[in-house]
Image (cartoon, rainbow, N blue to C red; front, side, top):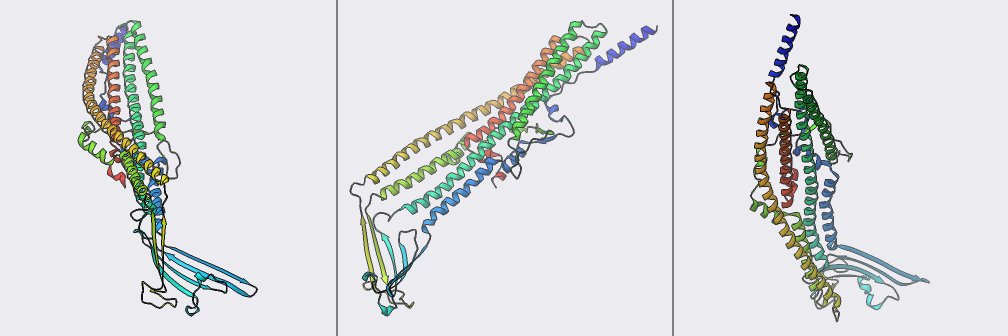
Length: 495
């Protein structure tokens, strides 16, 4: 009687165990279930903030505008006023041969009229006659005049060309800065989504292993009571062992992807940081992530206007155009006029004197013209060849950008449809597995069918998450192809 009671109690417990359904969590349930209370979510936007804050490549890119400012400052230095002075004295055996003192102030201007004011004080026994100044003026003389090129250098010269090219260089450097930052953000975003997939892949395999553990426990219990054959326990054990191996491999991939992500984390003092173990990717994908970002035409139009590669190439063309103007200007003969008033409008004593253009002046003309112009003509030809090369490069890059955007946009929209189809497949595989597990609960187990459906569900879930990660990477890649500043992560990063 006692043995019968024990058997009945055991059978009752077995039925109780069978009555408990094995819970198959959906992707949405895994999204809101963190593995531990200490876990912290790290969203892509928060990660981008860390990258932009202290990453060495970003810091290098931020130095480019300063380089451009100093380049412009260097070019404008050619227009700085220049103060010059010289003093030359010779005294021999008590005789003052000469005492020559000269000081001058030159003020270069954008239009090639360069004013010059000089003060001379010359005296001595053996002074060169052309430097002689009457003693009535206390051996002092003031000259004020200007120099004007009427041939080469009238329309453009080297210093004006340098300033214009330096201004264009600022635009080129700004485009290069955006390109460098975009490049590191593209790499960082892709590695983030690799980390995201590695983590979610681990979570899915871990959940599948939990189901396999429960199936193994129930099959083992059925075997103990003679409900199933011993081979069924072996089959359940093999499935569990495979899940355990897959879980370890997925954990390794997740840890490795986290270390890769740490490459982008730097402190304020440029000390390398590591991703904390409690940080996990933000798995809550918003619905709008599957909505087309913007129209193809607007994205293409934006790219043709602001793509860093096109801005840089266009800037090079503008610089070469300035070189071409300068080369054409150098084909002209050099004819410089110099006119200086002597002791007017300010006299040697510092008093104002009436200006007399036909009296008390120095006038000079400088003429220069190479007979063959081989150097000048070769320079012009070289510049035109470079313009043609750069134009071809611009047209080619423009075409490549338009095609890259079209291809990326088409792939992105198709990926959206694939995600929706894959989501439906995951839901159906989940229903099939739940049906087989229900049969297991009722004692009508078929391990082959259970394992098959469980494998298919896990495979479809992983594929779905892979598609989601690839979709997000493709979205960032589309912004990269269009040259959108900061890959459209937000206008707040522009400051």
